[in-house]
Image (cartoon, rainbow, N blue to C red; front, top):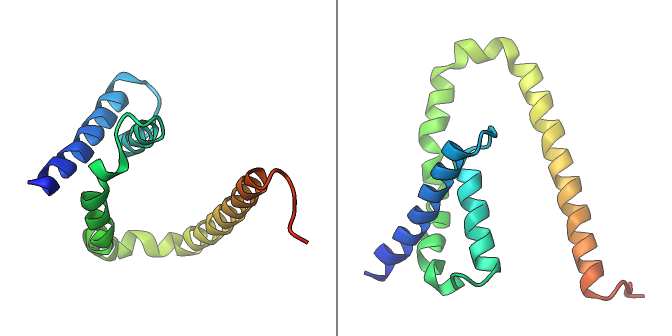
Length: 121
């Protein structure tokens, strides 16, 4: 019963994300709205982490299985993709490097802020 309650709470935020996508005329996926709302609710302590922790952990543990269907769909669309494979790979590599750099810089900035701006010598 605990897992159903936790999963239901996660689905509630998913539904709220769908409502935001419907009401706000900005082309942002509903899942992003839902995650942002859940993050805000956790950060503002509206809901506590234990209220979703077990179900969230289970969802993360099965995440690779959730990508099987999209991967198979990509393979079935190979004829359409093979003409654009080089630009797709360049974009994937460039965006991956950019995400790594930004994540590293943000992490360093956050860690520097926690230390009071002092570097370890």
